[in-house]
Image 1 (tube, rainbow, N blue to C red):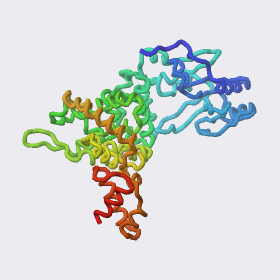
Image 2 (cartoon, rainbow, N blue to C red):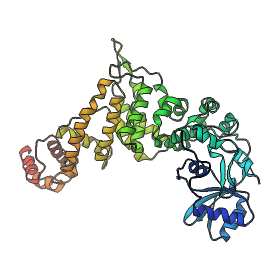
Image 3 (cartoon, rainbow, N blue to C red):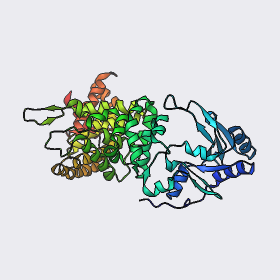
Image 4 (spheres, rainbow, N blue to C red):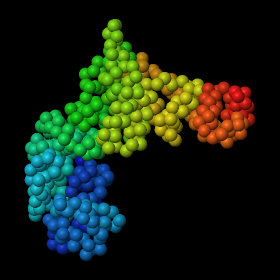
Length: 465
């Protein structure tokens, strides 16, 4: 269990303390709340300081402006302004309670109150519903510190009510469990499963943001094994994986467990810091299999073309979650080639680099190393015999590093000649024929048929007419 302190492991930062003091010197009550309190008790100083106060937003704006701080009206409908203190933003929100959530996203009514206890009671999870003051100490009405000690995520009050208010909290609970390494408390867990279908009505961009947090935690494998009902609602293309027997001598697990193992192994092979694209690719690398599945007369499963189909599904799914286009593109490229045989010959290395460059111009070397991590993870997620493939992948990595260190050519611009040389040598005018000639030269270099030097390339051009 995590080591949890009785009080924050470090003082409130000076910029946050300045906001707190200005409000209290003006006669209002103020507390530090939210992520700062939670992480400070865990000894992990990661959050900006957020403040809640008895002052209305208008009073807050007046007081903090008078104290020399720049104040922005960032959410006044909910009583929030953002003060810039010592160059750092501090969100300051009036104590409030909320009415019904007709759309299961926004409260129909926000009512400002003067008691911090009412404000804390409306929050999502106990570990986020604590307040702290340097003199008054910790205000913990719902057992948040105890839940930190026990390592559980628990809803404040009735979990069904909390999730009915805002269905995105279902996915947020999974994100917190992943990020903190916690389990979800049983009653809260039952509500998660029951309310997961309500995610269908949440804007995909908001779902994408929360899933991004799950992905970034590095605990996607845990989420797949323990919170699949929620994850599959957030990313529906995953749903067919549950219980899918791959009917293959290369696979010891069903598709969902295989995927979980690949997600866990990617973390290990990438040293705990995979790129966002690689983590998404691990999750979605076999997403094309349910679409491409067939069974032969011997009862053996086949998934022909699942790499290409899966790459398209991956890209569309990530764009549908409003992820950056470059992340979606990189993940799709990794999915496309995750099952490709890699030859450690110079030509084999150059062929891979060329294909990756065609998919993501300028990113081939970085993607090649990420692809190796994905292929290693894929291998150890199959059978013990397949795991031996990591040895050949290590050989390929050495060959890749040697080729890149030697300035290998895998793009037309890497050639020792350019379009002008081709036009002069062959008497061509600008046009497609020039590009075709350069492409032919690149093929020759990639396959080792001609040296990448100006004299050798021009001589080869002349010989080929």
